[in-house]
Image 1 (cartoon, rainbow, N blue to C red):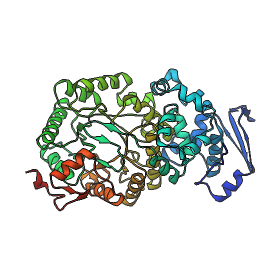
Image 2: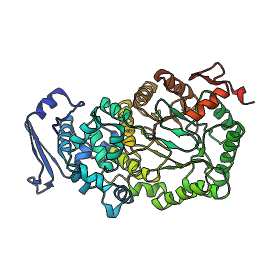
Image 3: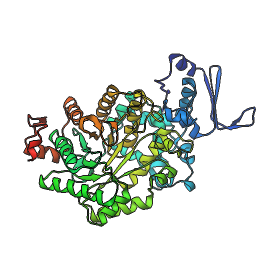
Image 4: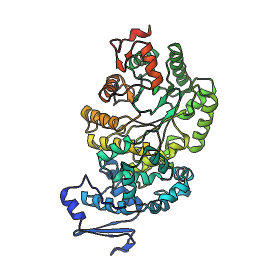
Length: 488
């Protein structure tokens, strides 16, 4: 299969320079005796890379976290050189050289143990460039992509994303539509869901209920009604779970409840009889970072089986994960691996438990990992594609914090692009300003606007309920939208 590297982010002189290149995919030693696996000469410059992990890092689009970690490309031309090397690496080389060794990292073990080796062997001789072309080809169907994804490690998926422009990422993401079922079915064509996020800075029940009613009245909440608690105690979490469950039952709302406390707190609450439809946990792409999160495969396995026995939803998908580029860097647990590749590994880890939702919150940490609006938009597009390519029902929270070089315009651009790319869900935050977590996200009004501009509708079961309540008619919000007296 013919392949010409596409470098949409390099300056014209760098693209011209690429045409005058000499690539040595073999070991070389410099004057200081350092061994390099890959050497490439482009025009008058020679670039050397120590490992596949080094190639992946240098091929990444600019992110402040990678620069802070000292692993980013030093120039656009070095980035171009790394992309060229990466495009010609075989999937077999990547498979045989995981960025973190199997014996030392649980995330690597889960990814490799879950891999379909029959499918992997069919495509192992493809180059990364050929994988990119296959994904983007008009002849490649959604079912084809779902099939080969079972034979791809997360590093392979990350590598393909590094060779894609923003338009490539949107086109590729549109082709992949994973579905899952909890009490509602997420991911169906023509549908866009939202998490109603009625957080309150002191977990005041009246405040949570008021925000929840507002979100529901604008058609937000079909993905989940999910509260981030200020108080992480079992008693406080149980109280919120009972309150949201009782409200859902009273108004016969086809959705699921969730309180985003630590997974072990939720498990204790569940064992004590608290009603949980969807269980949450944040994940990362290295075992070191997950240790800091207080989570492991053993804990997640227990949660998975506990929800199957005691959860209130019909399932079978009853877990909710949140991820985002930068968490490993912020914890000093990146192990020299770039943020995008670690995010891909997080998705490879997450898919083991067949979640109902995976929400990406790149931009939540701040400028030390994602510096500005441009980096947020790129990260959101990368993460949406990589998550969906792993077969996950992906949502995007195009978040930013007020100490970043980003604003509402960047957030709205990210929201519109990822909605065009087929994100499964977004957050619904009162006024777009989370008063408990102190960050900016999509508002209930943004949610309604995204549906309207793209002709999308709520999840099927939830739309029937909205029509019954007089909130929506023929896919459009009625004059009753935003009227909290509906629930009196």
